[in-house]
Picture 1 (cartoon, rainbow, N blue to C red):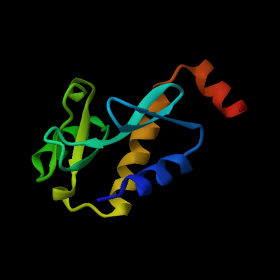
Picture 2: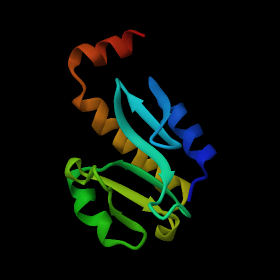
Picture 3: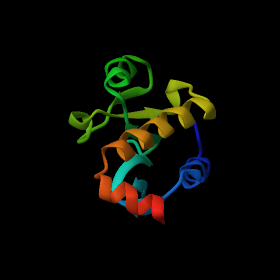
Length: 119
């Protein structure tokens, strides 16, 4: 499982990301004002989780694995939440977070994408 610092370092490395702390103490990363990944606490408050937007295919498969479930309140938008029980290494988290970033970026209006690219 990534630490919060490792999660934040990776998300900050992606172009044009913004960061806010909200919903208690969740670390929320956005691109073009849209959320792509969140680091927060599990409902019982004793475990960290990482939530992110998943592709249709990943959303169908990931929640069947240990330590992964459809994200509460965001499942309809095909988000999953992953705990340390999943046993993922940093490379796996990075791949899924990058994919979430790409999915959200691709759905941004062209005007927003152009503004981000022009800086």
